[in-house]
Image 1 (cartoon, rainbow, N blue to C red):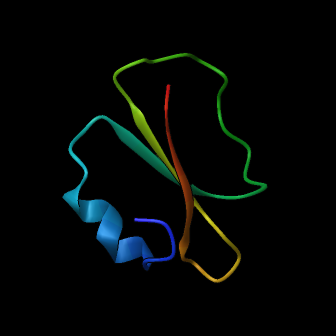
Image 2: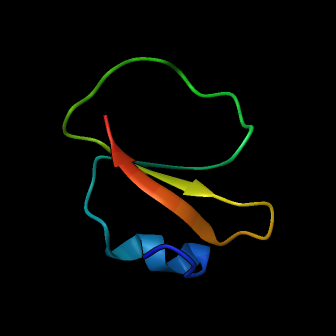
Length: 50
C-alpha cells in the first residue's frame, strides 16, 4: 500500500486510523487497529498496527 493515494486506505477494514505525519493522535494502544500514515502529498507513507 505504501506509495498509493489515501483512497487506497478504504480497502482496510475497521478499526483503522488514517492520519498525516505530524498530526496529533492519541497514544492509546489498540492491537486490532491499523494505522495508515500519509505523507505531506497525501500518499500512504507507512502502515502499522496498534
